[in-house]
Image 1 (cartoon, rainbow, N blue to C red):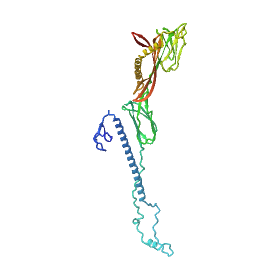
Image 2: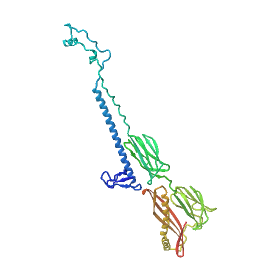
Image 3: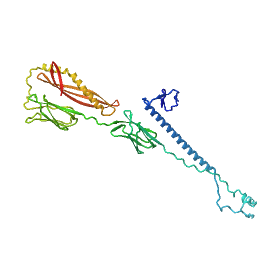
Image 4: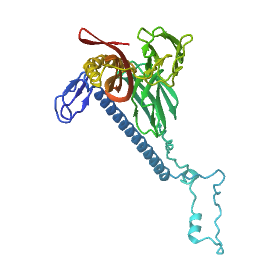
Length: 434
C-alpha cells in the first residue's frame, strides 16, 4: 500500500504509518489505478536509492575511520616499547684483578667500583633477561569493497507495460536481460565510474529513445523506453479513367490495354468511358486503345511515377475538331452549369465518406495513432454538350493529420478524383459515378 501526504506530497509505503512525519497531516491511500500511482512508485524507488547510497557512504566512512585508528594505534605501540637484546658470547668476562699501579689509566672511582665484591650472576639485573612486552601485530590494511550501482527502468507501449523485451547492456559490462510481466528490468553489480549503454530490442518495434547512455556512473540509473509497432503503412492506390470518341460521339466496346507496373485490360462502356482501379502509387503505366484497322489519337498515353488519379482520352478517325453549330447560347450554357452546381453540396457529402475511410486506414498504421481528415481543395469541371450536362469531373485533395498519443506525428496529402455522368429526368438532375 502506498500513501501520500496531501500537504507536502511525500509518499510512504509503511502500512503502519497513518500521519506524515514532517507535518503530522493524515496520509491518503493511493490506489494502483490512480494516475499518481506510477509517480508514487518512482518517488519511493528514488527515496530507497538515496537511503542505500547514504548507507553505503556511512559504511565507507566507518571503514576509513577504523583503518586510520588501527594504523595510528600500531604506530604508537611500536614507538613506546624498545627491546634490547645481547647476542650470545658478547657478555664480558668477570674482572678478577684490579690494577693498582699508580700508572694505571683507570679512574679512581672505577678502580674502587671494580675492587668491590662482584655480585653473583643471578643477582645481576644485566644478566637476567628483561621481560619483553607483548606487542600486538600491526593490523593489516582494511579491504575496501568497490562501489557498485544498478541501472533499471520500464518499457511501455501506449501506457501499457511490455513483457519479454530484450534489454542489452554494453560498455564497461556487457550482458542481456528481459523485462518482467510489468515491463521492468534491472542490471545489478555495475562498477562505479563505468560507462554503459542500455538498448531495448524487439522485432518490428521501435523505441523512444533508441538507447540510453550512462558515462562515469556515480549513482543508480533509471532509463524508461516507449515502444510502438513498426507496421508497414497501407498501400496508396489511384485510378486512371478516360473516354474514347469518334467524330465527337462516344465509342463503346473499344479494348483499352494497361501495361507497366500492372498489366490488364478493359473495354469502354456505352458512353465510351473506361477505368482502371487499384493502381499502386509511384508506378509507371501506359494506356493504349486497341481496335483493328483503327488508329487513335494519341496512339497511347504514358503515366510515370503515378501520384494522383489520371485521365486519358482518345479520339478515333473522322473526329471533327471544330465545334458543331449549337442552338444554345452562352446564357443557356451558363444556366445549365448553375443548375448542376446546385448539386455540389451533395457531391461534397459523397466525398466526405471517402475522408472517413481514409481516417480509418491511416489510424491503422501504428498502434496508438489517430488521424484527422480535412478536405483542403475541391474543384469541379462540367462538360456541356448540346445544351446538356454530359459529365462532371471532381478533383480534390485530402490532408491527413496523423497523431501518436495525441501528439502530431506527420501529415499526408492524398489527392482524389471522381467522375459522374449526369442527366435530367422528371425536371430534376441526377449523376452516376463512373
